[in-house]
Image (cartoon, rainbow, N blue to C red; front, side, top):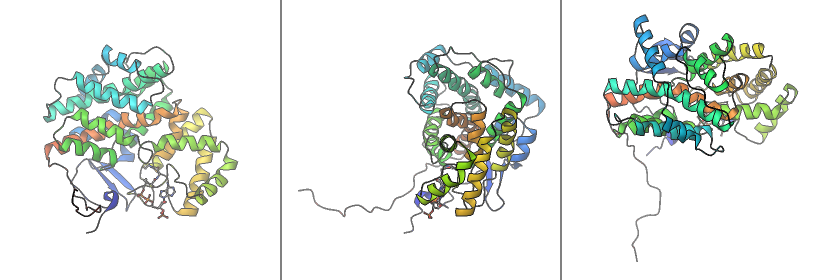
Amino acid sequence: MEIKKGLAGVVVDHTSVSKVMPETNSLTYRGYPVPELCEHKSFEDVAFLLWKGELPTAEEKASFETKEKSYRTITEACLNMIQSLPKTTHPMDALRTAVSFIGCEDDRVWKDDPETNFDKSMSLMAKIPTVIAAYYRHQKGQDFIAPKKELGFSENFFSMCFGEVPAAEVAKAFDVSLILYAEHSFNASTFTARVIASTTSDLYSSVTGAIGALKGPLHGGANEQVMYVLKEIETPERAKDWMLTALKEKRKIMGFGHRVYKNGDSRVPTMTKYTNILAEHTGQTKWVEISKILEETMIAEKDIYPNLDFPAGPAYYMMGFEIDMFTPLFVMSRITGWCAHIMEQTASNKLIRPLSAYNGVLERKVR
Ligand code: COA
């Protein structure tokens, strides 16, 4: 029996949410090339597209945005819970706990018809930024800033974290990062969400499990690790030697490699473009200079290419976020892809239950 360790190369189901094409280094959401969505559409448009299968009409867009804005508030009980967490809690753990708590507050928890799941998805997309910002300010000993209905999705988030709206360049780069992180077929966290949905458990349980899966440094946690490495290297002059030494020591270099893309990640050119714009805007050019040398050295030595986390890590850093917030920012975006997959799994469900090949002790007698 051939074992496909890590399910590598195994096709487990159909999906119409997105298509990853490693042969051309490209990615589409519901048929639309993602770089085009980044240039012409907002993250809210993309959320609607992933959930409904089509880009919104002007009317649908207006109603979706009004609803999203109305769902941003979290209850006082939820805020108190967030503010009672030890400040040493990683923001991903705080977020996982808050999503589970929000699920406890929804009396529709067992309802999983398409309209209810769409509504729950919108509610989570709207509340997750509030949770992340609330915990961020709690950790810093600062007062909570309530969401503002007059601001767009990205601008409101910056306002809740930092008390001000960002420059247009920053807001656009952030929105692009959210679109790029939104969806990527059957990755580990999405598959986790689908496994949980396949048991006919509820959407909140699926998302809570997915957050746990995304936290790992081999998955979403890599964007944080990239920035720790860039900070460790500190200057472009040290970058090449750092990489050569790390490779000699057979270290895994975070932000490089991908299970599906072997010749480059389709999302990297777009994110790199906006990371470079941020470097110009903030004057912090050294992170992109170090990144360029690391990338060139890795490709020359191992022919392994950067993944999305590689340019996204320094982009988030230049926007002013603490490093341990990077993976929660990924959640803010990937909630859209997860919920699209939960809805797809629910619409055509079969319990996900693979087999294993036993290699333990042969049968024996109890004495
Ligand atoms: N640094 C150094 N070597 C790497 C590497 C990296 N980031 N990624 C892959 N390799 C090497 C492996 O050591 C292995 O070499 P070997 O055949 O000599 O043992 C080979 O490339 C194949 O790697 P493997 O880990 O089997 O590929 P995979 O498909 O299982 O792993 C990842 C994919 C993403 C888990 C892996 O590339 C990785 O750990 N990357 C770093 C974490 C990261 O950035 N994650 C975000 C992914 S979007």
